[in-house]
Amino acid sequence: MIVCSCNILSDGDVKACLTPGPDCPRTPAQVYRCLGCSPNCGRCVRTIRAIMDKALADAGVEPVSACRRGCCPGLPEQAAAEPTL
Image (cartoon, rainbow, N blue to C red; front, top):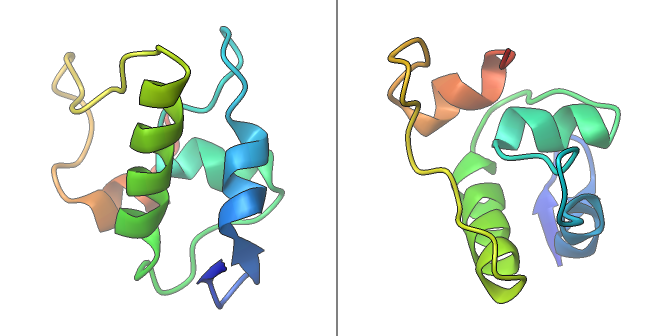
């Protein structure tokens, strides 16, 4: 299923980036970078986040729900557009 029509990304593309370990993307912005693109309109961010949360939960990895340092934007659309450190 296509989840990002701007970049033609499927749910399978997103899941392929999510291998457990230290290099696993933990935010939608990191998934975009993993796939070699960036968000355009941002409508897919919530869907990508949901795919990530489910895939990580199925793999036994706790999803990151919010920035603990207070440096990240609060809205999912903004978080997808911001690089993470």
